[in-house]
Length: 294
Ligand SMILES: Cc1cc2nc3c(=O)[nH]c(=O)nc-3n(C[C@H](O)[C@H](O)[C@H](O)COP(=O)(O)O)c2cc1C
Image (cartoon, rainbow, N blue to C red; front, side, top):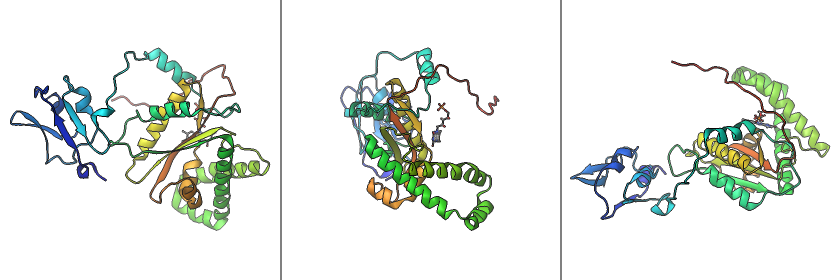
């Protein structure tokens, strides 16, 4: 449902001085001054986007927005301290994709903390449309790894020489990635699985998948996952994004049904998670391919 179709109540109490600060910070042209009073703008092009900026900015806590995804009960006290650049940068520099995990479960408390951090990421239009699937427990993750590998197997069988010739014609440069990376990788994962090895999810104790309907921008899912994975790092856990998971979930109806994804829902990003069983002695300096300043 689009925001303009959602019911939103704007309530100001008698502490409101009509200073119009909320109007000046509203990014949606939803709050307006009319006859020196703050009013919801019925002509606003897309309604209240339920971002909460007015409530968070009001100097007197006078305004409440009550909608389908927001109310004054969602306001929180801001932490008194912020990590300085060195603290946050040392977290970034020390972060690595982790593919070796201890045989230790990840507690629900840690997972909740990580997901809470995910909810702090920017969202294209609030409230969040992002959904999360948590598969927690090594056995469950191994079942999932088998299901993904079976999907790889079907894909490899489908990609016979005739289909590949057609795809070469239609896919452009992406074809080389399919032929030279995705297919060999899928074959490796299938062969390893036959030997009881898991080179797909690295025997991780947990995996988290971010997904959503067509109303959910994939960037929202990716940003939520990014915040969540950085929080995991701060909690002493390790993560690794697994690129093969989202397309396999999307293409395998049996899998979607088992894990409760609706027909119109797609996954954009997934990461495995666990207590790292590897220690890095060095970090690495990486560069963007290009940076232009104008
Ligand atoms: C979109 C995406 C997909 C990825 N898929 C996989 C994967 O399937 N398996 C894996 O081992 N690592 C995967 N990675 C992790 C990258 O290989 C890793 O980020 C890269 O090697 C750099 O290492 P670092 O994360 O330690 O800096 C993926 C990363 C991204 C961003």
